[in-house]
Image (tube, rainbow, N blue to C red; front, side, top):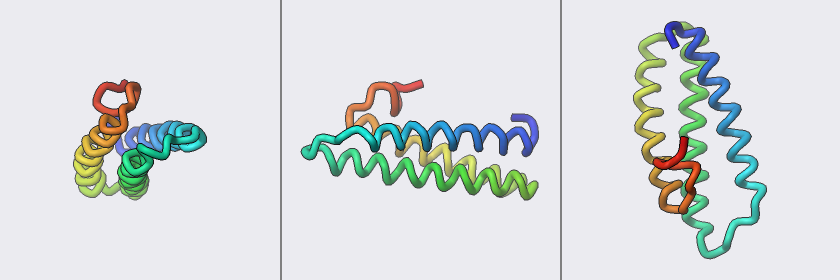
Length: 98
């Protein structure tokens, strides 16, 4: 994105996609032996969505500095989310996903 308005639009679309995918994954019965690993992914994923929502708010408030700082946080959190997805064995999420 080249502007904060474009950033907000992109982040909002991303939030919608992540929420839909997370809801779909939650609807699938999880194996009980891996529940804690999957729960760890859900927790870190929720943290990433929360940061993305803060980015959207910062962009709508035209706060370039805050949005940039939060984008750095989201990048770091995304790495954590990917590692939790990898630990659970996701193939289309995590570091191997698109």
